[in-house]
Length: 239
Image 1 (cartoon, helix red, strand yellow):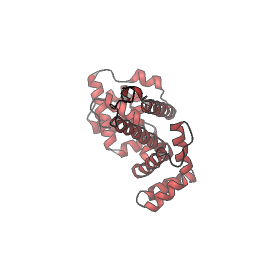
Image 2: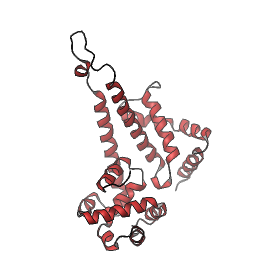
Image 3: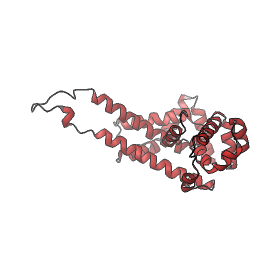
Image 4: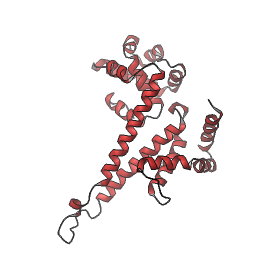
């Protein structure tokens, strides 16, 4: 780990409990926060833009919720900023939908029929961009484990019983951070520990090792969008 990365992680750890340090960290990383906001807006943010304030809040929340299991801090913070902006647009859409949308104009046209719903476009674009970035980052990280996206498609569980075994395994891993830490450190799926802890057959996990690599990475590195999809597939897994 480079000295710069180590220094950043030390500052993040301190900022979790020190508001002054958190403020200083946000101030020092304003160029990063502005860049992430610009990526979302497709333009440079202005000081008065609400989006910039929302992005700053997203960065602060990333400080408070970060752990090393989530991977690189700045990548995690970028994802958190994007999701916070998307959530804000959704709330704005709902709020605007409650104000005078059924009031007729002078031509007796209801506003709900004449006002374009531009926030759908912003929201969908933001989600698509964030999802594409998560997939690209996941694919790159999977390469370090010798696994490709095509391997995952071929190795995904197809039967209900096998899917249930994978669900139990992932839930156990998420509840035991030491297992995830070992996985990241060794770049090997701890099959014996997972099988024993989750109460499933090791041979079942061995058949789906490549699939487990992808899902465990998603659970440890802040892939919020992909994790939501995976947990939905895993029938009842909590996000």
